[in-house]
Image 1 (cartoon, rainbow, N blue to C red):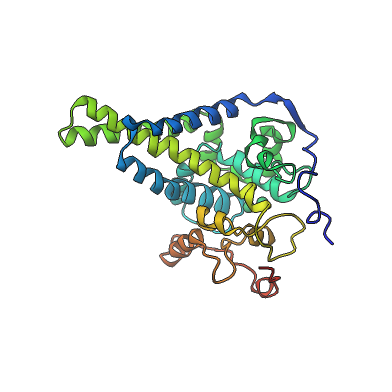
Image 2: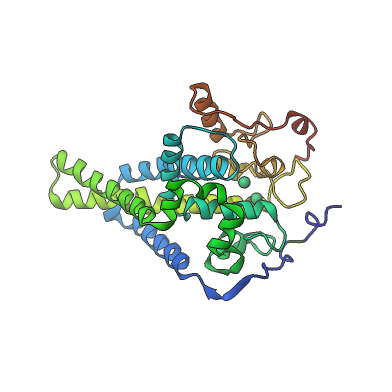
Amino acid sequence: MNPVLSRPRGTLSLPASVNMHRIVWSYAATVGVYHLLALAALLPWLFSRTGVVLAVLGVYLFGGLGINLAFHRLLTHRGFGCPKWLEYGFVVLGVCCMQDTPARWVAVHRRHHEHSDRQEDPHSPLVNFLWGHLAWMLVENRDLIRLGIYERYAKDILRDPFYRRLERTLLYPAIILGSWAVYFGGGLAASLAMGGTPAEAVRFGASLLVWGVFVRTVIVWHITWSVNSLAHLWGYQSYETGEGSRNNWLVAVLTSGEGWHNNHHAQPRAARHGHAAWEIDLIFAVVWGLEAIGLAWNVVRPDTRLVAGRMRRG
Ligand SMILES: [Zn+2]
Ligand SMILES: [Zn+2]
């Protein structure tokens, strides 16, 4: 009997390095303000069908390619290689998701894999659901102080000058503010070009900003966070991985394939997370397509012997 899998939910202690009395205000304020701005989308004045379409497409473009493909499968696990211009392009999409810099994201996630569902795991939902979903980010955890985890988990990332610039200069906020300007300015210009009044143009630009950026960012946050929370609590386990990771079809649909999380923990480097025919993995389909046209190489595929021997639990 595996001691982690048999652990009842709610019995895992917080990491010893967490100080619940110290709020990380930069994260807490960002999460709070973005949720409020996303709620502004409910105002009829800010509604537009174009904005809703951009929000939905943006979930796949920024969340799927930026976070799932680039931050996770490419940078964290080195599941494939691609040209630097393409890597940076995908990473810029990930930066627009406001999930901190690539080095920080990679370091925290590598620590999660090293200590999954044990006390040192930065965000195990076996503490409680809310902790694993988002509360872990909002309070101080000394183990996650940047320089400490960078030294241990992200040296390879920080050898790249582009990723160092994202840490040390204003490039990171500049990319985010630039994406706001593209949405607002694009809406403004499109409306004026179609004969709209200045007031109509401002309204349309604001609509695209709120739906295309704030609503989309909040949706992508909860989708990413659901991999940490839902996919470590509910679903089936195909591999005995020694922690609580699950294959969760709902998370898999929302994340275009990241919800096959027990498969992923069993073979973290594999660029393909769906191991069975029915485990649809659109992110891997993109990697496969890039490989077919020569834009991806050294694609790490699941070990077929392990896949053949996987437990059939559901
Ligand atoms: Zn996990
Ligand atoms: Zn991973």
